[in-house]
Image 1 (cartoon, helix red, strand yellow):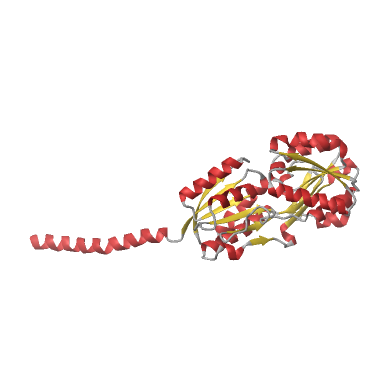
Image 2 (spheres, rainbow, N blue to C red):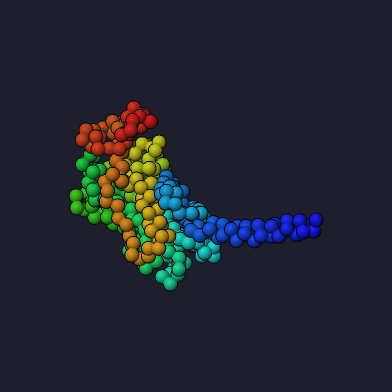
Length: 336
């Protein structure tokens, strides 16, 4: 009986000794290749939300095991700095900044000497924003501002074009200067109005609406987040609104929108993160510029054009991804 019991105990002991290393190995394997990605988004609006989603959707296809700490600074620079400090304390594998101020805050907390890479997304001019370093890479959303201004002039014949911009954001100032230069090139008066935050956007629009034929809004996060208020002002005044962010004009009366598909920018950002997690140095990746025309979206609101007395040439309608006609959204894929 004792021999049988001892044999049973011996068998159990051997089984445990075999099982324990296997169990331990299984735990270790679950940690290998698991990365924590900190994402600091300046604020929530359709373009930046789309960039965030595009990045995450791409990484979901890579086979990498990742987790996210998704943070929203709500347009506040000090909050963006606090988020960056949090990511440092949490020792994230990669810190992603969506929009210029968020990326700048991360770059300040994670200097070149840091082992953590910073990836920016939807940043217009990384060099101007100080986002060029050995541990920084990302995707620019520099728009074809001159071509956008020319399209606006060609369709409307505008002689005075207004622009609202955030004077404290490097990205916004760069875009304002490009729009100013484009207006000068085409002999059009440029009427700017500076703001410090999104709550001032409507007042800024009201201050210039009587002095312009149209308002051009660039991919300025503070302004785009309050685009509905600009749309309200231009609609009541019977003036044209051009937005460089097609994702932000849903349900508005903006006559023209032409710019990046920000989901695609997010996908490209995800590719940058993937390369870094697989061992490539951020500095060797640098800034990715999107030049593929299929990554841009052109939208015309034909209902607004008719109300304002403008005709959109058929050739441009054929090139558009989205048309608004008789209150319906018509895409290349059908009516929605």
